[in-house]
Image 1 (cartoon, rainbow, N blue to C red):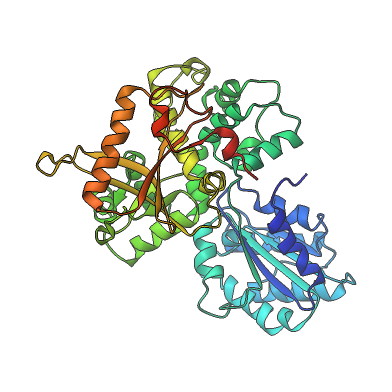
Image 2 (image 1 turned 90 degrees about the horizontal axis):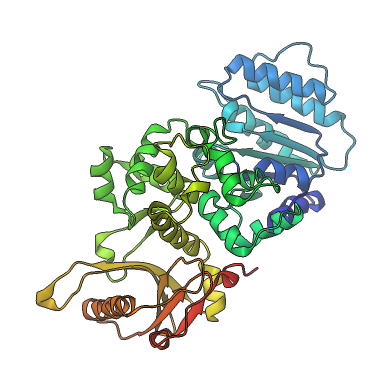
Length: 473
């Protein structure tokens, strides 16, 4: 059963009523549900469906393609010698079909593109010279190797330039969509538990599909990652090797960012990774961002320093904190309840969850229709200039001349603002006003699972965001 993905499904289904043939590319990170979306949207009814073979040779890819043609009803009489011959066989298969729309689905297209295979030349010829001239072909391609899809299909500068009729970037589920999925599976979880699961699994549908309703959330996390034979064993290695042809430099970037909570400037990242500064490095950063692993932001008022890059992917953050040096305890996560290590991680992970749900935060603040920019900001201690030294992780800068300074605090119950915390927030405001000279009004916003305790310091807070608000649909 397909949950959420309503807009994406609508895009695919519109191809069935289109007056002309359609060429659709679906891309997104591994485990995000691309194949499931396409199959469900077309009710598993394809004129031809084929998936590439991971690390298969050119000969193996062509042989597998021939088998898929046979399964679809076309007699190949042997393996095609090259991709031009293979796509000619596909053309003949399509011509045999009497379906009003001939739906062709090529999954894991990047795996089919072996060195010197000329796959893309044949695909371009198939579409440009024949399929695009018809009115009844729906041609859908996707791949887990997001970087390959971006370079060879989405941003193709050759024969496929501007040929796509639709492109779908499949993003992770939001908290609300995870809740919708769990409800569809009759799995009972409180919103607090869903947030804790999201802090580990992010919005990756495949990970959530491994939840066993008979187990608690900590027991499920143990089964996925810490058991003797965990369900998601070696997931980190598989994740990057499937998304990137040469994953090593990407992992270097991710590893460097995984150890710096505020993130790193480009020059700092180059130094930390030892990678040569080049256009290739810029491309890798863009690809990591398009895959949802990292984000970039400009520190407010410091654009001359350039972009700062920050690791944002929940599972990857979890990996570097707890799985890089995997503990031997099979019940590690269950036994981590209320430990200092887990509590420290919860604070960071909750911040990331909040940053992934800024539209929901804006909705609660009543500024969904107001033009905004999202920034972070920091300054070093400078007693001479009256600076205490501050790090602000989330600023929502509004066109109506208000800045929401967001304090994201994880707690298992109502969060109590103490005298020390109140002082820290006031110091941040002082530093920000002193250093930026902004004329905008500063509104303190606390984002916490259960809201804040109403004490003598709560009056300094202009707005509260709770867990329920993050689940806005």
